[in-house]
Image (cartoon, rainbow, N blue to C red; front, side):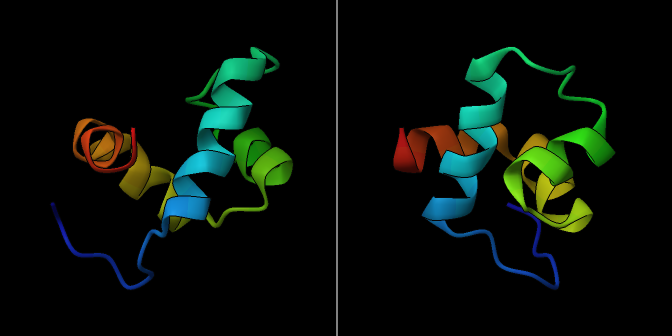
Length: 59
């Protein structure tokens, strides 16, 4: 996993997945995902880049 300035916590990944599973927005629309999940742009991009590793770690 690539290190970012902000560490992604399990709760961050869960917030991202809640938006993903809601189907409300395209997950590449980072601004809307940020608004809905209260995650920073940096955390969202980190989750997108490392999604498989986070999913394996926190399922």
